[in-house]
View 1 (cartoon, helix red, strand yellow):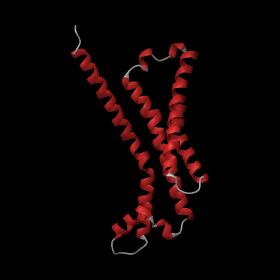
View 2 (cartoon, one colour; view 1 turned 45 degrees about the vertical axis):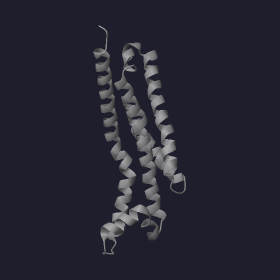
View 3 (cartoon, helix red, strand yellow; view 1 turned 135 degrees about the horizontal axis):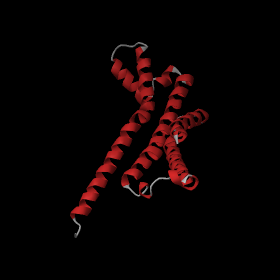
View 4 (cartoon, helix red, strand yellow; view 1 turned 120 degrees about the vertical axis):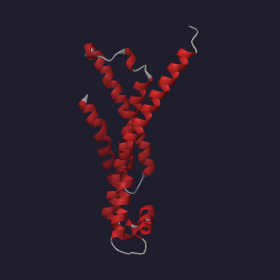
Length: 177
């Protein structure tokens, strides 16, 4: 299962990087749509591996309650669907920034939101620090989904735990016993 964890994190990043380098231009919405397929594939791979474990090694199989509890489903969705999707998006954006830095002219590098923000932050000083600042803004923006993914996963797991606790409380409170 350690290999599955490795695959869960590095495969989407490398696949998106390779796809972006092979796909000319910038395609944010394309990365988002493909990331949903990557996340679904990772989730199905995890569930298939769990199913094979039940068949091949019945002594080490998961309890039947594993997939029936709300917290487990939230963990599966967060760790094996959302996280690979966010990592895939980040990999595509990092490759887009690398392509732009390698093949773009200085005017193209300073265009867009990153260039405007760098010019605004630099103020009246017109130096090469503007270009460096634009580069930092672009790299940070490209890595943002990767940086935010643990926070999103933690928030989803906390929300699922809260919903399970509230539903359990409501069920026991409204019971006729």
